[in-house]
Amino acid sequence: MEKRKALGRGLEALIPTLAIEKELQTVVNINVNEIKPNRFQPRQNFIPQMMQELKDSIREKGFIQPILVRHAAEGYELVAGERRWRAAKELGITQVPAIIRDIKNDADLLEIALIENLQREELNSIEEAQAFKRLGEEFGLGNSRIAQIVGKQEISVINTLRLLKLPKKVQDMISQGFLSEGHGRAILSLEGAEAQVSFGEYIVKHGLSVREAENQSKKNRPKKTQHISSRATKKDAQLVAWEEELQRILGTKVRIIHRRERGKIEMEYYSLSDLERLIGVLFKAK
Image 1 (cartoon, rainbow, N blue to C red):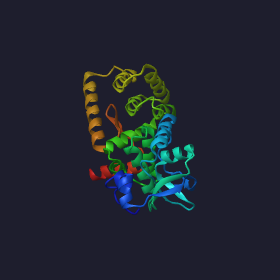
Image 2 (tube, rainbow, N blue to C red):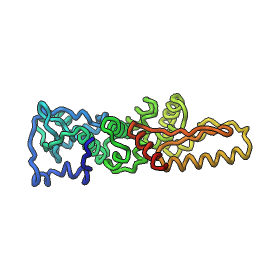
Image 3 (tube, rainbow, N blue to C red):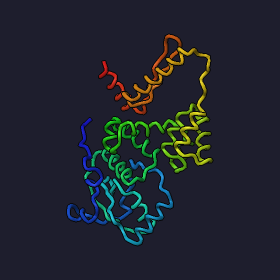
Image 4 (cartoon, one colour):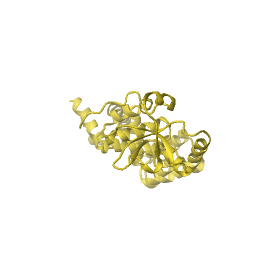
């Protein structure tokens, strides 16, 4: 795969403010009907209240910033600014200010759309996770590269991806703003979809904070049978320490299952590129 240049300066390098852009590039007015949506748009939810606020702002002040498009087979394809484009259509505005960029690589298209939304803090955690997953599975980007693109720590990307292991109903509660990413991580500590959904509903009903949810999740976890010896209990504490150390080194969830004198080590991965990363880490340790 051809190595692409890093986005470097971030969104400001791609979508400068309108005042500066007029000095550097041409802003053109394009008919809204000649523009089609970005098929790699990470945003899935367009909250009506936020859309109304945006429409009110555009109606009063106009477009403060142009949208970004690229040439398509017919007309143009959005790169960034779908909310502004949608708002214009709903307001009956026929022309929108736009910057045309020569972006041929689909992975770059997804990267830019993802960065724009993240820098504007407009994506929920599930949308972020799904975008990270697409970057990994469709474009072969590892978690370290994704972290570099979005300006996050790699472990943060991994933790966000883990949210996709939650039941669809819990993911929807996060998407709709009833639960946060922190709540999602607390729910993941429980085993079984039914228990996770039930706990998610409990958090929403009682308005638990993330810390309260974490404490409650510890109480809800199945208790281990208490028939082991004190020597075995001490050994379990060592296993926990080893699990935590492996998780730190590997950047993923690790579980050590020990029975008598044998057992197994389980490691989780969240995409094929994440599996490739793990294998690379293990090979380096040889």
